[in-house]
Length: 377
Image (cartoon, rainbow, N blue to C red; front, side, top):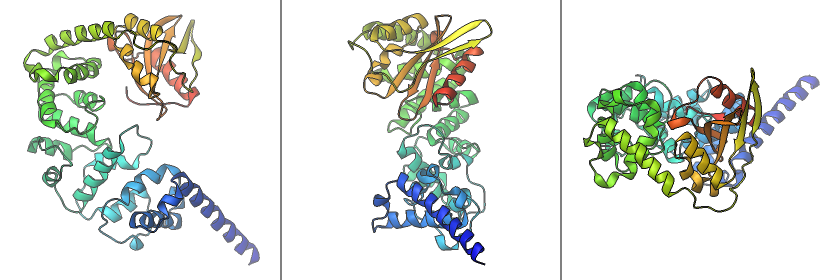
């Protein structure tokens, strides 16, 4: 009997240590203050510790921190376990029909980079739709752009893969306009359209125009084209021309921008915490080299014909680091690493093409060796 009590006591202590480690990760003094969100947060972790101790880990702090910020439809005390998804279902979902699958992206903490406001938008959408609301109600609340049509709302409801809200919205818009699936994914990955914007009506017209002319557009041209359209907004009617014409103007604009902003920072660029690498595939030697000077950054962009020179500001302010993947000393791919998330967010070759063959293998091996995550670039 005494041995059984000792075993039980050790198990309780181990669970308490795990809970203490999680609370330490999220600044416990902030959450233990006597206020509703703090009490809810600790209550959630106590419930997980009781019924699902395997879910008590630092990676779940972000979705639970969102869960305490929306109204619950059922009391927490009636939940009896079943995993993190079951907890969200219990507290937020009261309808019997299936909800859009993209909303469950909030339970995937390893997904990259979306701003906290987008995560909050996702949990608010889940709470609204789970309590019986419609996408039209979400439009009235400002959670979905008012420029969305009924057809776009229907396409949004049918998205089943967990993905950020911005990416799901772009996929639904492209589908409603009759564009290809790859275009919605590419638009959702751009820095200007990954988030819901205040000027959604203007971008909705752009997306309609791109959907109509997608047959003349390559996947790797989407990001630089969106940058170009964003910079040319003063004209208001950039898209009245053919897609091929605008793409030529975009290439000329990037070349001019590259020449105009070639060097504006003197001296060495900040060094990141990530190191390069030497790799061998067959008879060829590949190297990953961090770009440390403005001259080298300009030379990288000039040789590969892309606008990496315009990223100097991000490097100087510690937001990104730029690496050059080379084969036998010849530049092949430029890689952008987002430092705060330790994530590779872009990799582009000559003319903004995507990595191919051994280039993708080399990037993946270097990322694994350096502790970097790779997203869909």
